[in-house]
Length: 192
Image (tube, rainbow, N blue to C red; front, side, top):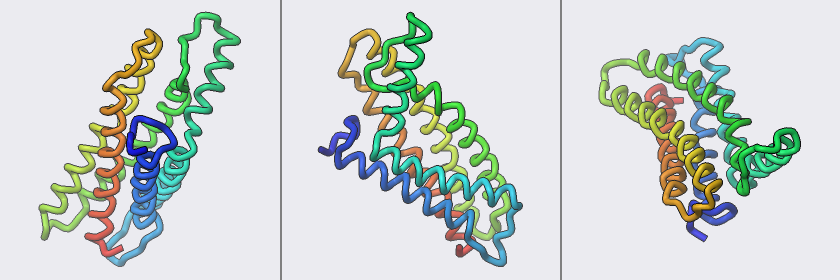
């Protein structure tokens, strides 16, 4: 029940709570106000979308919707293309969602970096820590897709039991926690 590699376990709820916490942290950035926290409308809108997206990803983590959609998409592709790659676990979700998730990550990261750069310099260690957590998120979160692709490849060769799932789940948790921590550092600095 504590295995992050399995779906619909207690560990899945832990992962989901990290996503939900990240959504709440971006809720502070998107809807919070403070006299010293002046950001553009597009930045605020991006943070609002990130908050909503993280909450939806939290729900998806528990409900395993992306795997279900991936399996349905695989059946659709298999009807059109007889040599479609096999997929027993719903990996086709990567084809559908990864481009949007990566584009959203890039956009959110761009605006987060701008906000971090505008942080007052009287406590420079907070800015450096915020940059580090943003870097860690940008290192880990795309890695989730890379590990999923390698898992898909190994699964198509019927080589189950790969340790890659451990890395994929670890990168997911570390990446989302890093985003949460980065957003909370900014929110705390501006007293949102």
